[in-house]
Image (cartoon, rainbow, N blue to C red; front, side):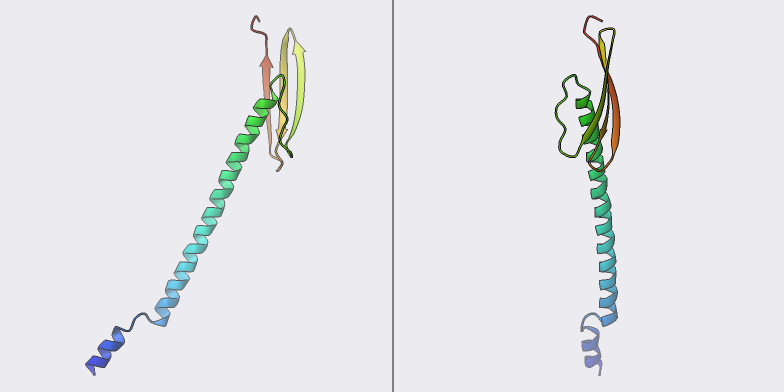
Length: 109
């Protein structure tokens, strides 16, 4: 009888052990996929903020380049005492806004 008992104890994992392992594996996989999703959204948000400020900086030049499709810029340019003040509000395709102003004066002033 001890030989048959030894064979049963060395047969492998029981059904409850396998089920517990599968549940733990699924929980870890779901939590890691949620973490990955939030990390990707954070990177996308950071990239869009950097693009926003880069485009706003470009739009405050005297002769600004065209914006990519979906982006909008509202530009206000005033002149006073030989200097040009340019204020711009840039809006991303998702509605995020950035405002920037720059003063351009000739080098002699």
